[in-house]
Image 1: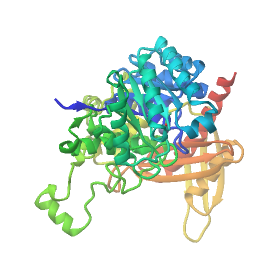
Image 2 (image 1 turned 180 degrees about the vertical axis):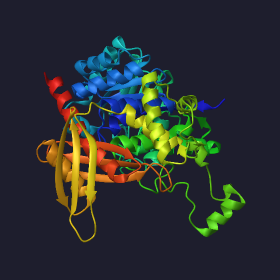
Image 3 (image 1 turned 30 degrees about the vertical axis):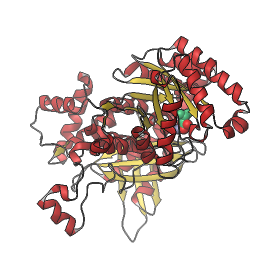
Length: 511
Ligand code: KIV
Ligand code: ZN
């Protein structure tokens, strides 16, 4: 039987703390549920002490996720570790993940601690954390730039106190595959009690070597790899989960290890994360980029027709890219719809199904073929819904290439109707301007806007993303419709609702 390498996902912690990738509570829970469908071994749900919002999201994920270990990050203080444990208490398998830097440069300039004090603290916190929680992981921050002899001492000390996972990150993305291989080998050969712990790696991508370094570490015997969906994370990001998992699967002949991941959930996980954060993946991104399985040149297409393996080293199906088309129309029953939801991994309440089924029928009136992606878009839209202060009631936009565009927008505000008109150069800017004036939330700046088609075809649903700023924060809204102007206006209104929701929840947290 081959060795299983555990996959530790830190999309909700290291990923979420990177610019433009923040998520609200509901969004984090949706992502965690998708990670559970992906069969991730460990979900790092956040950094519980960072803010009341972080605490709440770690707690929610810990309470809801049943089939993965849930971890919270903590610095090496009793308060951090206790807070992490408090947030994790409801988890089926909780794990405290505490860290302390061990490189000379971090100890001297960041921690202002001597190596002796760092060693003592790492060991004391191991003891403290193990008294609270059955499973504890220790990370030696900046391990790849740490003096090996000192690192061996620290790892031995924390393992003696019951730490069972020792993570040795390449925090600044500095190492190279050959060097990291030897580094892991060194740990295996020089830490006397290393057989009582799993070696974990966590690699940043500053030199574009994150995945290669992680794979080299696996070859050297690492038993856990930390990574993020789409490779999001601090600076240049973390090693990309989908690339590591598919490299291990596709080149099993080289690595001879398995993971527990259901690779057919990879594409969906990538897509959901992009939707939640509004950060799209580059078209040529390995595994999940739009062009990753597109064969454009004639020679390649010819080869593919003769035998797919001429140019295809893995199938789109293996990452869940090709989907079943489900042709449902007005006359299709709720039963088939519920079956489809179940096959996509959703079990919803009767009320939720009824509501979604109504939306599905409206869509079926407009589109001939309803695919899995259409259904997913509807479900995600519903599950991510937040309390709506404003909603789009109706709009009329007159536009042309020789006149100014006029947008008349009617919104519903807590049940009341409010209407306004604005002129601008195009339909989207006129519509956004009218909404901005109607909502009376001060100066709002449009930071980012885009529309993507959920499926192919001229009748496809458009998914619009809008990011606005009130001068202090950026808020991200989404809208879905077969009409892209409708989708865009809904996305702007959603961004305003997100802003009010976040402001409201932050105020109640502060009280
Ligand atoms: O990059 C890093 O070193 C980290 C640790 C806190 C695990 O994120
Ligand atoms: Zn990191």
